[in-house]
Image (cartoon, rainbow, N blue to C red):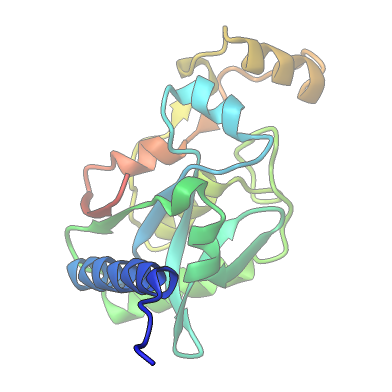
Length: 207
């Protein structure tokens, strides 16, 4: 009997080969380094607020480090914690992300101090009020303070009033989170502020 051609198997084989080929090429373009800052668009209750405050799709960020031989991302989620790089990427919209790296590499001693500081923050609650304190932390504040722990200022903090507070999401947050008592002079850094840091350069972007 003459063997029949199975189009379904052939079609799936083409799809898998294509994914392997393109992902393989993608991996060759970018090699992770400890200390890289990684950005994404999240899918949670904060997303719309941050987008409207900053007029940017970049709503979350974290710091790449190595643990047990695998790359992880440590970030101020709810609470501050870490997860594998692959898991972190999967939580973003469309698995899209951007990565910046400092133009001037950090020495081994300072890098150790940075990550010691970062790990000491694990377990702290997420800061929904975006206040500049060490008791609670939001994502970009956490990354900023990790670098600042070794004297690196990624960008100058802005004031809360520098962002778009007139939009509906911001007005709702002010009423529900602050009960009207807002410090408009509060120091703030957002993910997109860090993305634009003059000290960094883009090394990966699949948006």
